[in-house]
Amino acid sequence: MVNYMEFIDREKELKILEREWKRKPSFVVLYGRRRVGKTRLIREFSKEKKVFFFTFPEAIKEAQMREFKKELSRFFDDELILKVETDNWYDLFRYLASKVEAETLIVFDEFTYAIKSDRKILSDLQRVWDHELSRKSVMLILSGSLLGMMWDDILSYASPLYGRRTRSMHLKPMDYLSSLRFFGDPEYGIQAYMLVGGIPHYLKIAREYSSAEKFLYDEFLNDYGFFYDEPYVILGEELRELRTYFSILRAIAEGNTRLEEIANFLGLPARSAYPYLENLLRLGLVKREKPLFGDRKVSLYRISDPMLLTWFTLVYPQMDRISLGTATLENAYKVFSVRFEELAREFLILKKPFEFSQIGRWWWRGEEIDIIAVNEDTAYLIEVKWKDLSEKDARRILSLLKEKAKNVRFNGEFRYGVIARSIEGKEKFDLAFDLGDIMN
Image (cartoon, rainbow, N blue to C red; front, side, top):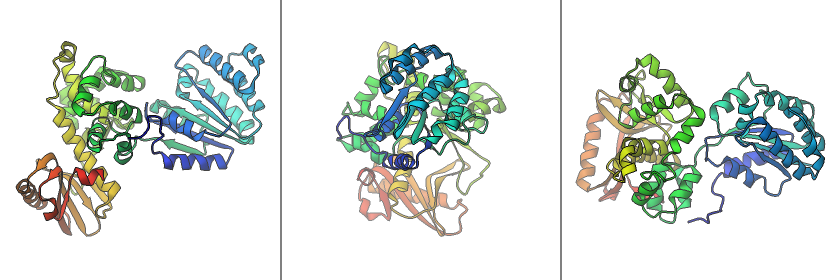
């Protein structure tokens, strides 16, 4: 297990930031969901650089400006700036630009909180960048967690800052291989990853435990647990009408994956439910799937955020029982079953035990195949089970796969495989993988 303070992964992102540093003046927009590690990445990148780093508090404009002046005073060793009376950001940004001389990294972290308080900050920054900062040896990083605001107010064509950035980076959660580096016990690490995904802050909480059961009881099924109200924090910042969004996510967690099923669960026409789904898709909290070699008009919706899947499967249906201390892990298997399928797909993509150019799922008239991976002349059909399989179980699964393949419209060779928690006699099968293959 790594040291608590060790910086894990993000080598690719650090290399991109270093390239931008070398090509100064540069303007980088870094965004990603809360707790994904944006600030830690910037801190790591800023080591041994002259850096003006300001994190905008979630506060009114006057409070933000007051804190900004304190940071300017500290950075430039100038107490006079504290006495400057101004009600616009232009004056403060211009002061910053006038004082910067040597190579400097300027970081405005959680910049979306500033936009919420005063949208004029966008045009103020644009003016100072165009006329002063862009003529100096500086690298400016704007970082934010409110994804909708980052897209609409900073990255969109309508933004005053449009066309100024030299790089935009959407920081995603870590993959499972990087996430395992948080844990001494890789099998528990895999379970923790399935429960909360590759969010560094979540993984740091999970690694304080040694079992998934204890972790779930203490941090999810406990009204003082960290994750007990985390979805309210994540969704509440981005969305209104939380009751409707919570109902949609609960519907999907309970197996209502088609638009019509979700709409029926909400008691709404499909056309009324669709805009809510689009917002969840845009934020990356839900994903839409279409079958490979199936009816492309048929879409299924799945919760793509692992923590939300765990919460809406285990916590939301048991809120009353949690307060009484009687909540159970009865539905935990449903989370592991769904997430193990996604983990299996990630394993195939990262480790490539065979070559393929496309990967997805297949379904048709009630039949499903968990994974189809395809190259030019071969389709690999894979069944995924969060179970310990006997040799007989594995052979039965492969036999069923061959029957399903008769309905898959593919003109090429079929190969059949299984991925499970463990597989007896694994070496006897053409394509068989278990946790050992995934973890090592």
